[in-house]
Length: 411
Image 1 (cartoon, rainbow, N blue to C red):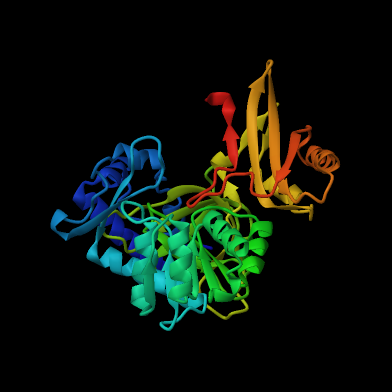
Image 2 (image 1 turned 60 degrees about the vertical axis):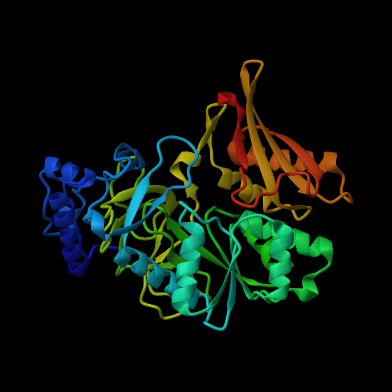
């Protein structure tokens, strides 16, 4: 999807602001000698920005608006390395709420809904992003934050929450607890807005059926406002994203060259109107594709496909490149197991081993099932893993994101 003239004008406005402020990225552009773009071809010559650049700018090197206009900072949720600090102006906060409100409306959520928010508050963008959008919509917010499942379920029943906002991992944990406690009849949920981590179709189906709700994938990252920059509609054929606020291109992660619409690659985002910390051609490392054509819902906003993983998800085992999504696709074909799995990679006796843990109920032969799964995985990735089938509930559940791949070779 080629950048439009209107979007180019907005990019030039942001470049001007970056250069004038002498912010980290403004200096980078000035050094590259690019302070104006005339054509879509000029735009593709602009240098990429990367997470490392944002870390190097710590603490406030990204700040582009005058300090008296900065009303808030957020920081990325990563637990390692120097944090990324993103400053926001009042307009940035409001723009983000407008985008999030659109997400809720696209999911058919109205001001008569009661929205229970379980993602974290604080420096992380999640909880407060869900809340700002819901307040902009005029819905009733139940700002629970993460954890304390007993309290979550009590409020869900007493307040008759109709919308659950959470990670897929926590939605799964809540679904299992509701089933275990036999309180499904007291739950009034109709929809779930799920973000923050990639999840399989099998997990989506399990959560949807357990809770009896429609599920919506919400997309976003702290560096680019936070969650709320895109969501799927009722036709569930990709996520609409807001191209009046963002320009999204897909590139070949190896060459950095743009790929045609419909082709898989890395998502690169340019913020068109952000004031506090505008970003030009930010490499997200998320893998997806732009879906060509118009959606059946009739909305004019373009669409991104489901996030397929990350360029840094790749595991090299026994000389073979393996992505978690390949394992997920194989596991999805086995009805005897649920959606939870864990991959552990170790280096024992001079060689790499991959163990896959899956959960099943006690009415199947674990040994036979392990063998069948191992054979199918081998036919997909080229070597045989060790497959362990365990009882349902043995694998860890999380109130945030669940670590499904644990590489013990570098511990």
